[in-house]
Image (cartoon, rainbow, N blue to C red):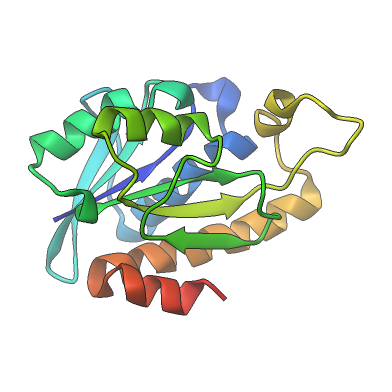
Length: 187
């Protein structure tokens, strides 16, 4: 069994913002699999599906980004999964739009959602898929306005393509494991 978690903020105000790219990836995967990710469970919206014979839980924490660990840790515990069964998808300021990176473990990189998950799990030894959203221009010093803003027309096309690639990477993670997913999608 695998737990695939996309990070974001709940509510209409945050739909399709840069910070919600994790939600976008999970929603796109759910659309492709024709399953809803709407059942409330441990402060998340969840859905269940089988991919290549393996049960997969899709989750979108509804705790707001900075408290994501309050949802992810109980989900992992409820399903009796190890850290190796978890993949978290989230936005990354240090990667340009259109770029994504998969890692088997690591730090938070300053991402508060990831910091919350690591704090609640007591470890950073779980897979993550970072989707680039780029950095604000120097004159736009406020990072929170940037991450809570919507993609411009050019970025939107890049993000849509990256979301599709991220969905494929999640399939690879479930079917073949983290190393194969990294080999194929970290180009």
